[in-house]
Image 1 (cartoon, rainbow over the protein chains, first blue to last red):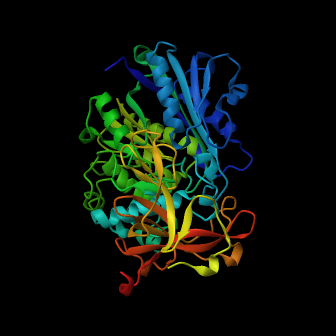
Image 2 (image 1 turned 180 degrees about the vertical axis):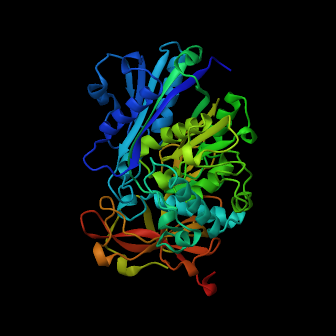
Image 3 (image 1 turned 135 degrees about the vertical axis):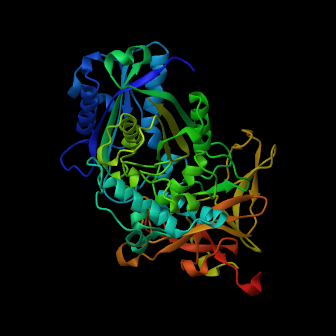
Length: 382
Length: 149
């Protein structure tokens, strides 16, 4: 393993709806919270990277944080925005360009499903005009097929959502804080069969930030640094089933999630069996089910049994989405990937309050996935 | 089965499908190097990166690979379908054309009780408004009745 990079500060702006607060304002709040957590000042930061999908250029926040002249790279990489910013900062520290770096992700989306334009994704306008340009359809069709192949029930999808809202109710930074029963989730309005309203996350608002430090300096800065053992970012290969695909090959390929997770585990020198807390992209509850296996945290088809046994709950063997995930926090695209890292950092430091995973977990994992087939994974350890 | 009432209307986009004596066909491409078939037509191969690709008319029949029902009206833009109460939920699926590719399309069936993975489907043409508000024609798949299989 190359030299260590540690996370010495983590901060959020609460997720949800914040009328009158811009995405950049939220970014500054999260950045200051992360700096305060690390007992550092903005002037101590030597490099920054960050971005949003729809709320502006991250480097504009320097006018709020202070004009210190540091290199600040704007990232706009869909759901992998946070992961890409983290990858960049990690690499810059390893390259010797900085000892202390800040990453920030934020976003602010209007209510309702995302409405990307097909032309921005290399597809003809007909695809959107005829009603095919929806991420919700993709997720519904992916889990529909998966349920048939691996015997996953609708009850399992509802249990995943119910768990998210239970965890969200214990998280003061979450958007949706009312617990929902399995029956309430199953009985909600059908949106895209087999997924009901409460099985989907909603586009929302929020920000997350991290302060990274070269490992040799981490102990001076923080008493309880969390080491970024690896961060791996991958795009799709031929044959994987991805969102916004007018056609896909008849031969199945390996999804970017699997490629990124394998690379993250390999670089970190740990295996999926070592993970004690994980945050997985749960754009909808089926995504959490499928990503559990795609990341290698379980076998395909094993989820039905694992979820019924409570394995992924906070007091289970492999707690997943302990902060309520995208389902309870909403999906501000640029912020979600870093929110996951903030949550694992809090869990590994034993600072997750009412939702703290018992047993003092030492090793955690995060995973984001998004259009048009990108994934970023991290392994974090005390 | 062609849909003569749609003849004469403009296609939702050029180059997506054509009408033949046997009915409509989707226009895809086939890599001369590795044989990969894609839809719509591409200028290069996503598998082997070759630019030596040729036009390839896709099979008309296949099996439903997965499906959902679009129950809420997508936002405009980009959706050009009926507004307000005129919106009707529609089926969406991927149909696997044997040995070619799996094509995403509107389905003529939107009743979840009547959609099943593996069921035989056939290409058809459907009315679809375009962004200018004109009635155009798009492609879709319809379930094949028992006696047609």
